[in-house]
Length: 359
Ligand code: 13P
Ligand code: SF4
Image (cartoon, rainbow, N blue to C red; front, side, top):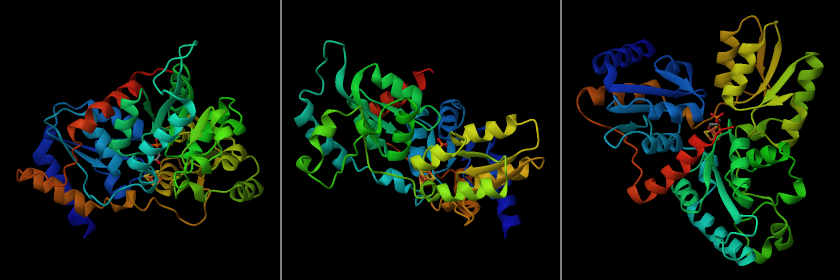
């Protein structure tokens, strides 16, 4: 039963003490969050993974790319554990390393030597990857002078990239790339989308030449469900409603909202509201429902009336947590996530660039 699982997790954590730290992403279900030592967005959890050298193991309640990142940033003797190995991310899977390597080679046919610095000190392209990508992609980015971003620092990171390159190749999330670049004043005409299924000739070479940001075709299946119609309905039902959406939402949705920002931005915006307020939120429903429960003085609801959890985040079940924690008690490290050294080294470079890039 749920109570038994709870009791097993509590008992295992008590036995392990400081030897384990449990990290939980905002989108995790309540029964998991209840046992997390740290709860946060992907940027905060990356920092949290660095900040606990005393722990032998980090149990990461989130998805695979986050656990890989935690492995990259934690110590070599620390084990990062993903309670259910099937907790992936469909967006991260949309940028395949072979396709990215191929795109890079084809772009070099247009731009020439990708390492050549022009009169203004800029290389032709800086690759930027969203945190929501495999370690292999982060490694690619690290090897080519690029950087990682999250939804909470995408603008800072793009500014970093434009100080070093004429343009950016941004993957996997077209929406975060487009929304961020648009907010920085980049015209849509200078944001062509790369189609990895077409050879170079099938992509618009002129658009690529004139580009500032080349977008990859990925998207988040949860955030693409939000629509302008949902926002119109919220405004009709609740005049004065504050609409805040995640930048993984399509551009028309971000434009129709009052604000957009990362999961932590959304949380802080609600916490800062002093007057009772109606909030319509465009992000994953577990977080929205938790915020609603934590702030009874406000009316907080998810823009999508059909409950839409992230199905892969949801694969972290308390049963798996109990299993991996009890494994640690017995000296067994189950479901360890390890990034191989040849990938880890450049991927860490790309991540450290992000952690050092200040707004
Ligand atoms: P943040 O935690 O950066 O807001 O990202 C949301 C998300 O989609 C995580 O997978
Ligand atoms: Fe991936 Fe979207 Fe789920 Fe985040 S919410 S883990 S981007 S599928």
